[in-house]
Image (cartoon, rainbow, N blue to C red; front, side, top):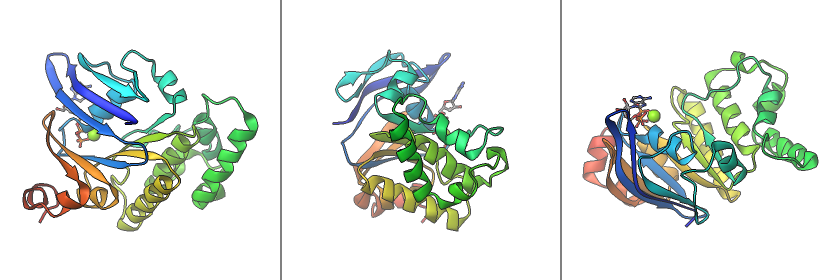
Length: 235
Ligand SMILES: Nc1ncnc2c1ncn2[C@@H]1O[C@H](COP(=O)(O)OP(=O)(O)OP(=O)(O)O)[C@@H](O)[C@H]1O
Ligand SMILES: [Mg+2]
């Protein structure tokens, strides 16, 4: 297991956002975490990447409990996070944003190689290297946020709603990129409201309902599950 979350409980003040959830991600998998607004998906990713501290529970990453490890150290252990709403550095150029993603790395040659790989994967970013990130379209900003995460050369990427607010063509492009990142050997934990798309790229999935995991299984089985189809696939 690359990542194992055990009995994780997270509070905002007195409100309990995660009620003792447990799940795991194996190396090489795409695992989807789906659920309605406010279910606790973003909270889960923030806690894994060290932005929030849980009240209870363990997060084992590569066998080590990372609950008390600082966020930048977690990045240097090979975990990258593409946050909800992209959060690019609006006043920096595309190239500067990408280089920020490599802040935990030291080897200049390796960083340049990764940058070339990111530009290969995102030709639009290459064309716009000097453009201020704040002037990119929403879909381009999502690509930049993903490219920036790849710059840390992660073993696992946590993605929070990468398709949010994008036109269907961009949604397809983003999911194609997720598949190609996965093919290259990167493990993916994918949070999505677009459950249909998420389940179509994922190996396995968990459904989060008001802070609890209500269902889990193979993504292909969930795609064919009547209750899931009704509640999450709009059918
Ligand atoms: N900073 C905060 N302070 C107080 N409550 C919060 C905070 N952030 C989130 N919450 C609450 O925690 C619960 C889970 O929120 P979270 O953002 O994890 O949901 P989500 O599943 O990502 O939803 P969405 O699909 O809308 O992004 C919600 O009830 C939310 O209001
Ligand atoms: Mg969210």
